[in-house]
Length: 148
Image (tube, rainbow, N blue to C red):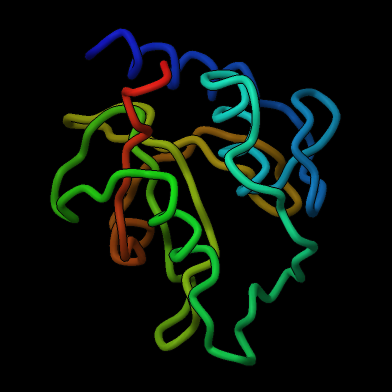
């Protein structure tokens, strides 16, 4: 792993145990899945890349807008869908036909892959990247090296 990948995974693991709080991004106090990614960004680059508007838990599902995916494309680098690389951001579609609205960070690859994410009613956890989760991945991204 590169120095940047090590730093991202270590920082993401440092958030484990943070309670789930919708629209929050405070390590130890509360975060949602986007807040975890925002917190990692701030840790790496010092400031958020853009102001975050209020968002509902349905993530524009009624309108069918891929707002989270579009934001990821503005700031992160797309990766091939089939590659598992530590520290990459993975975007999930939780139901077929629904908008993509869950994010995580690849923690470990290989025989026992994991991802770190803020999960409703669980907080930030490191979960097995099992087949049911893997089937829901619709995009992968990496944090940019520039500015690090």
